[in-house]
Length: 130
Image (cartoon, helix red, strand yellow):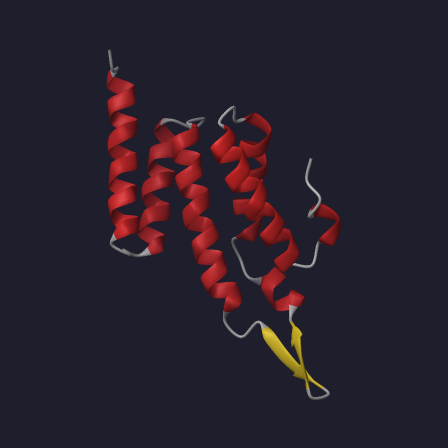
């Protein structure tokens, strides 16, 4: 038997997934998940989607002009990428999911994303996650 709360969460997830498939504005997807999490703060399915949208927004903004040309060489600009807003919240959610989720698929996905995120901002010591 599906509860009222489960149905409500499912509707939020379906709406987000539809918006994501249709490449709707990432800020609107973030707002939708923030609204959903205000009602259901610990819901893993909602946290996954918020982290996904934050990760996407940060990645798009951080990748713009992230390379410098120094002495004729292309150099990755860790400072610019690290200064781009949004990665901190995405990382916090990913770390929480990694620590609390019992879903191996979610844990594997977020472990890989955290490795990429920490590598992108130059925090190599955090790339080796437990």
